[in-house]
Length: 332
Image 1 (cartoon, helix red, strand yellow):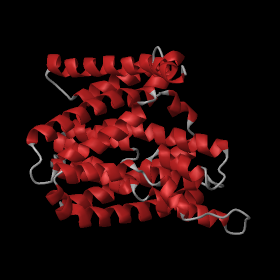
Image 2 (cartoon, rainbow, N blue to C red):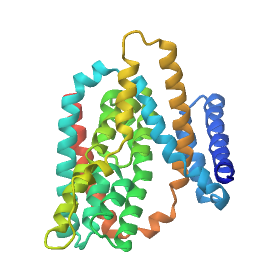
Image 3 (cartoon, rainbow, N blue to C red):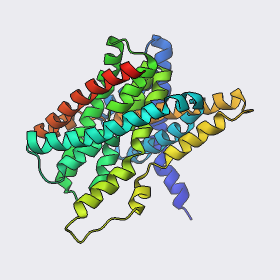
Image 4 (tube, rainbow, N blue to C red):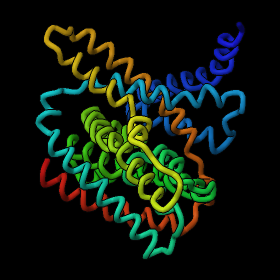
């Protein structure tokens, strides 16, 4: 009978931390007249995590940032123009398929034949880099019986590059003088996890953030197929078998909500007031979520990750970011 009130009490302190830092991020932009709330939100979270640390009592509430991020992405669909999506859709889908397929093969090759990694680690690094970061690592790990050591190394490596790309990509976009659409698509194709992609995109501009998220969600939608393929591949010659149900279990369900909200917002007769309200809620959810995202960025991951996994992903990122930049600049 007391379960629900107790769960609220457990989550509330951490949620208040997210709200407090979120408001501080908004005020920082107003006072300094520079940057975006998302940059300060990530910064405040990272500073807390790497100095004082997140108290155990706050961790359950802070961890809800993942859910807040997914809801924010769903509501972000209200700001998407379906005519633009339809126009660029085939090109984005084609680029996404090429990036994922080439990326997985490239990381597997680099990991196994250049840096001498064995076991399940190459598969975890390949999917984490090519699909959707840590969530892809965990999804694939559960279907190929990856060891805890392989999971730890792959997760730490991906988190390091999430932090590095979150800083370097907006800088690169500015130095290269990329348009908002081009930068958004480029970061959506090249970076790893959904949160940092959105943060980098919105750090460039609102339009870049929307295109970055849309492109990244297209990549995310392939996770079920990739997990199914790896599961089938590693089950050959063993007693373990996979089923098509894996596809649906791993498919990011919030992707459906994103396009559903986009369809509703673009329906004739929908008031601009309604769309503006949904966009405002989405913006605030992103700010709160990015505080939590910042709390996940820890300097100790730089020391924990092995040099060979790091070099594998670094070389992959340099090749993929360069190739996708040239293609995106040519097409868009």
